[in-house]
Length: 211
Ligand SMILES: [Zn+2]
Image (cartoon, rainbow, N blue to C red; front, side, top):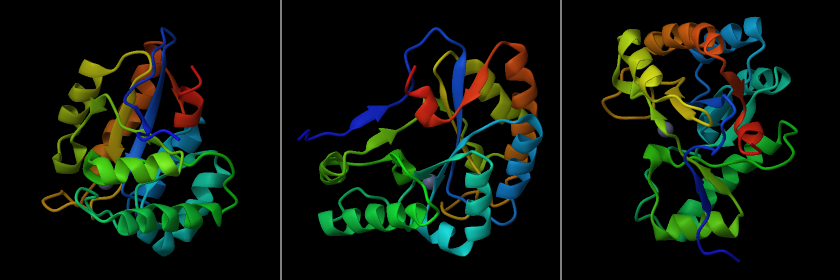
């Protein structure tokens, strides 16, 4: 048994494939607007959802799944897992996995830690659960940004084959966050038009990590 889970920040490939990932949702005000944009273009993304948001927004989760998006685990209550006891961490992860499975999801459910942070205890819990930890190599800091142009600049500057882009479809889970996610939505509309013109294809995390 590995003591440390596998951390993935990007995938090593020369193919122009990338993954769009969204943390902290589903959110009743913003997530469906993003789903509408993807539906029109047939694009699939990965949503790292929190258990408590799943419980409040089951219809949105159902829609994500029926439209071919991937669900990831972003803990139950979005607590910082650093210095938490093993039992608390395990409960946060297992509880959210169970909620996701209720929607008939089979196969691996990948994990993204709240705030991108874990230490040894969480690492060993994740290794025991055989989870891959999905990080990112294109940070957008969209959770504190209301100017879509700045979000776009950060994406265009860093994106390359195998990139994992992190965005947020909710503004509720982080202190100091901008609650309104319309800047993210405007940025998403732009990138799904512009990046394919540069040859990029959007993949879910499970698809991307096979490259
Ligand atoms: Zn988060």
